[in-house]
Length: 200
Length: 200
Image 1: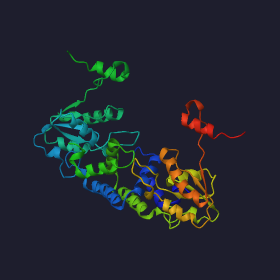
Image 2: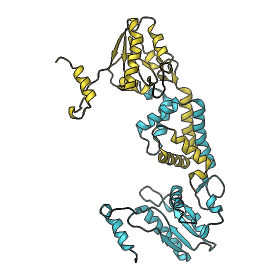
Image 3: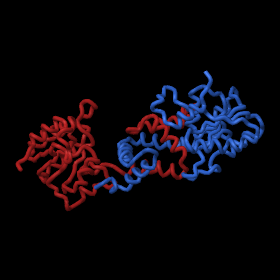
Image 4: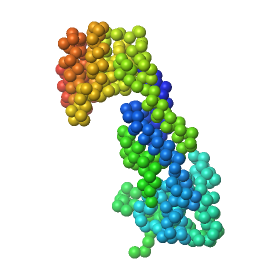
């Protein structure tokens, strides 16, 4: 006797195991939880999944996720349309929006160039980004990809494509995180913070 | 701009948050993962949920989960029908089956008596258990509820109901876990292991 004697339970566990950061034991717990739900609760859960997947798609302009044709940011007339902030994924855009520092447009790449995991530039939304730059409105691109090797490489790749178009390309500053302790900061970050030092 | 600007995404995140041991950040990650799936993948996922929930129910005899009317254990003619091992939930039965020590029938309570979380004896499958004892086949009940206050209380409660019927009621032994270190064993467990000491 095990959960594997019941094929539909086994399938459900396998499906939960496919989710990110859900291991075998968590998948079993989640599967049993689903079995303990009432019929309407299960329906609400599956409907939420189907509904979100059906309604949410990429904004025609910035490729961020939205349930309308054009996302609220691209539709916002108060935004500075001369600057586009390029991010890896929608969550990065949300994190930047929370700072309330930027009042610009975004472009979501949906990934980074990564030879190791086999993501080539064609799989990102770089073509869509270049399309947005053709009419001359955009004067600056803020590369806000992550401070990883892949994030850096992607920023460099796009920068090389865009600079010849006469558009300014900037990169988020690297340095010691605010509240950070020099003693516990890694050498590369320290090096970057020295290189990027500013006049007081 | 946040995930809350998209109602269907917000609903999906809320639904994931209802699952056990899934916090807000995990729920957001899971929701974005769902959005990244293909149409057939989403369909497989929701179908697995609906299918398992529809097909799996309680065995008519032992109340364990099964997709047939009577579960394979209750149907197994090689089982010793004079002993029933009483467990809190199906996973406990699976854990005991893995030891291959028992060749008995089970009874799944689907919970424990807990005044704090408001679970009364009526909500457990105690009535079904008593029904199984009426024909005199069962000679022993092994109380295999967890070693918690609630597990103990439930074992005591059932024991008081069953003993007058002339049925032997036993309880799993408490003691030091095999491979356990006395130094790191809690006092109550140590006390139990002294009380339950055996002649060598």
